[in-house]
Image (tube, rainbow, N blue to C red; front, side, top):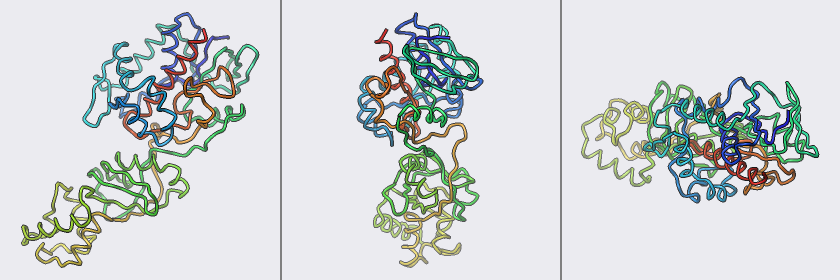
Length: 404
């Protein structure tokens, strides 16, 4: 079977590429080839089933700073298709988005099915063939374009797009075609920590700054204590920026946590002294300061060597210093990571030097394109990985459309 365009990968980037192509050239013969039994599986479970479509960040220069890998390369593409364009695009197809307090954007229905229905309707409108359960086994360039060996039938096309995300077999096929690969490592993950200070505190959350001891890696944001250790936006951000460094450490390192990042060390000590005068007769373990989680406060006070009976008036300078240290320089041993089985993001993929970011075309092979996470691009949480899919898919579609 021959097509004008074949898109390998039935995910977010694949559908967005196909729909934008169909919109520009309704008569093109387009196919999406998906190895699984269903399409848009990652869209379905993203954002807790709500689908975090994009982020309310409308300045390309600001937006690129959410990408540990791809920051430089995405600046030009974001000037072509940015978050505001995404909002407008979905609105055109009948999907209204809403902005939450943290800037994340979701469909107003709070359901990823809304996005799936939008994509499948639009693909059907432009007569895109969606071929399920077909695994690509080999890719070959021919005089008339590209040939694909698959698990079911041979396919050919004049233009070929890969949007297969973190698929090692496809990466190897691209390497066989001469593309350089950046070795993949997990990006967004949580830290496994067994420590009596946080044991049985699952669900406790508070703003904090976490840094990897002996490195420049540091991130600030909500930190969530889980039954396996630490998670939350701050930890996920740290894991994204530190993906390669932490992999080299085999995920064994000391994490330094500042539970009160709003205070410098000296400022906190001064504040504690004032608090001591005001609440002299109260026991330290039961009368915490700030809007600090009570159970966590109790654990950190005890970890500082302050027993349950001591009042604020009882504290000496050494104990005050110990409490400041526990609150702002607590060290936690990380032994491994946990990833979200279906939602995890990978750092690595096709080397960005091998791609023309004006067109998303391979620099070494004509009419071969890439979009989405197959490239060595990844972002922190908040809708940024999907924005990469929309932008690169849009550019690939625009470039291919210009050739017909």
